[in-house]
Length: 417
Image (cartoon, rainbow, N blue to C red; front, side):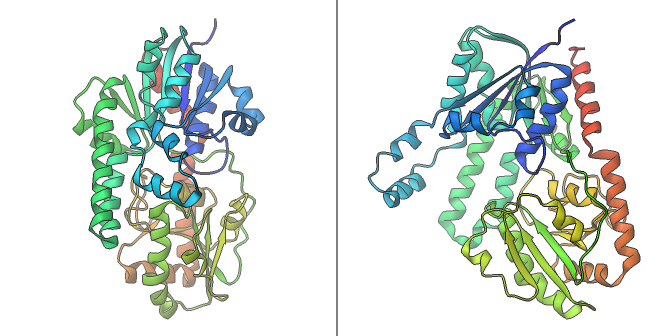
């Protein structure tokens, strides 16, 4: 008996290992390929399709019966290319910002044209901005039996928190622009979410919030982020003690978290710590201000690395001093998988089934965060207990195997198996 056919639509090239949004797409795709015959449609905003096809890993191509890359910049982006030099082009791009509603519309229409007349048992749209694909497919004479939308993040809520907590300090115009972006994301959610049969979210908290907001026929299912392909060697923490931060440094909440830690928490930790320590900051695209945090003694801005696992294996603790953002933190799951104890703000740990003092340490005020960090330096028993608690939670809730079971159960409940 042949497998049912599934179209998986993604605005990023899925990754089967590593970190970030693309890995959530990759871990889901790995499990869905065991249940369905998968056509992967990748819709990109202006990147050359042939370049993206060349970057596709062999394992990803082997998972899918067909891979189609559609790359088409929106009209506003094409207009900015008419400006004569790079400076005027950047200014035009800042003024003519492409609303989230339209970031992938042109590429989605092009993908639907390539799928003209085809029928799928399931259309699985990864991220809100791919949500117009089912209608585009039908407009091209295609068809589908069931639609699934994966909201890896509750976008309008995350943007609202960012505008309220971080943008206000940058002035009224920045704050107003942020609030306008919140309204755009909320409008996109209103027009998209009710059209789907199933909506997947990464945490129970997001599921409950969205269920309360939308009185629609959609089934909301918690499909957690997991860490895949993560096989760390036995840990060998470095001396002196290392506090590790991992995350894309071009992502504003991550950048703010690093600055908040270095400016507000670190001075107090220096006074409290009973032994020497270092802070390592690992992530792509640190700007000049972040790079200037390097002081040659207790702060090191490493920048982008091909593999973060050696840094976790040498770390005494992971720090997640986030004050904004959404979703669930893969950086915490990575630390858990290596039995590295984590100190986080409540926002940083939001959406994870954690318990303060059992498998994580949570603190929001700078002095409390510093005190928790200081405790991990001096208390070996606490450090081991929190690290082992995080590992146990990871093995119970956030593995690739559990993701496979959740997806199989969700599709069985939907009547596909």
